[in-house]
Amino acid sequence: MRIAIFVQLITLALISSTFAAGQIAWTSTGSMAEARENHSATLLANGQVLVAGGDQVSSALSSAELFDPPTGTWIRTGGMATPRTNFVAVRLLDGRVLAAGGRNILSSLSGEYLPTAEIYDPTTGTWNSTGTIQKSRSWLAATLLPDGKVLAMGGYNPDDGYLASAEIFDPSTGTWNITGSMAAARRGPVAELLHNGKVLVAGGSNSSGFLQTAELYDPTTGTWSATDSMNYARGDFTATVLATGQVLAVGGFSSSYAEPPIAAAELYDPENGSWVLTSALDTARAVHAATLLGTGQILLTGGQTYSGSGATVSFTDLYDPALGSWAKMDQMAAAREAHTATLLANGEVLVAGGILTTRYSSPIPLATAELFDPSVIATPTPTPTPTPTPTPTPTPTPTPTPTPTPTPTPMPTVGPMAIRFTRPDRPHVSGPFTYSTTQDTILLRVTVSRPWLEVDCRPGGRTHRAMDETPHVLSGTHCILHVKLHSGVNVIYVRSYDRVGWKKSPAKKIVITKL
Image (tube, rainbow, N blue to C red; front, side, top):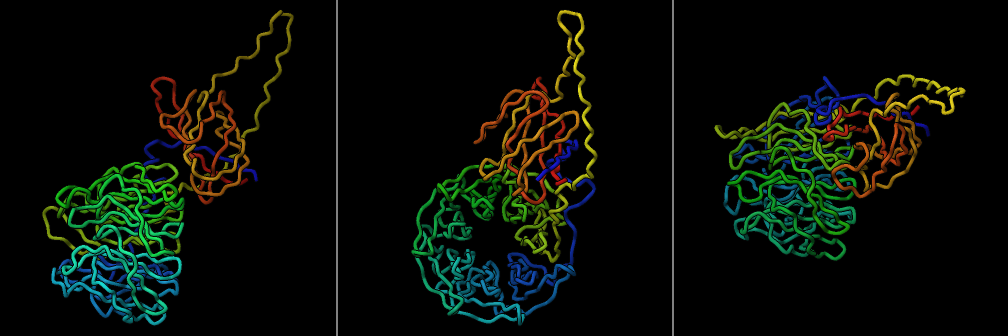
């Protein structure tokens, strides 16, 4: 396969904003029939999104509605038997949706914490009651296991307090059975199914405050084991499994609800059970939402920046695992927290509901919804321009002069370059290519298998950050580079530096297209 890479100059600032100038990544869509926060949003097999329950600050909801992506409208569907908020919803392997636990009235009375569960059938648009949970629990976490059963754990109720217990729901029998308990009681933990089949549970809170610890559940044995603790205690944060199998934990409250949230982010590696810090957010936040995009990037939306009844934000950020860094995206039309953000079948993200709080007004539940289009942040492929035919350099004609004077070779524009690889964790295929600073054209032979690659070029040395793969130090205007490229949109950003103070040039945007 022959690939031509066309280089177009863009400003460095453009990298940290949307990449398609003049286009906005967010568009408003139809509003829900009812404003709601702390609700569930589940992508159904038919491409619609089921939104159910939640609350309007003072009262829990039983209603449910469907978002239809082709029309951008909401359709009423059957409501749950019981109003519930702070519950869990899990799509089962057969396409039905399990809703379990939560509270039905926003109070501290023990009778308002629910042991009930019900199942939504998309073919009939109705809910049916199923087996009762062994322990009433709100602010629990739940995960679909590989065998189709559902693991639910943690939570809180006034009678038992903070819960360490866990239960397994079997859809084939409609029953709940106790399984091994966690080492720590946890209210509001995160629970993520790892690629190895185990479940990572981390953070949350109990009587001792926010938790830094994490543990692993093994479905084959029904037992829990310890793993490394996070670098920060976290509550009201997000955790997302990346395409690499690592887990990205972002933001949340760490000290107390009286203190602002944190901006720190970290990665869990299931291979060695360790957490490693990655780039932090520009703006600390909690009660936000995180969505894994089809490109492998993470979209972070909304949240709260201050403690207590602090300011809700409309900020959105994009985390690129290839670079280990965040980029600012367009802001949403509405600031929101305690909302949902669901990846649709077409690759867009539906953000719905939530609540708006300020430091000077009462909380306002939201019915609005909007769509994020990831294609807007991917730079369109420019129309290829013909590659100029190089003019052969004439061979100097010998003269009677004892030492002929050859034509001087111009100094390269960029100079000797060191290449920093940003995806050393990916299997790669190699291909030589030539980088010409005069033609701004790169020719290479590679097999493209994943979405993004970014490299830094600077003369005569390595980049400041140590990488797992040794850069190739090159001279002149041509180089041979073993690159790791990816499928889908393929964009490389190359930065050159002058020799005085390592001053950055504008970034060169390289879009890869097949010839």
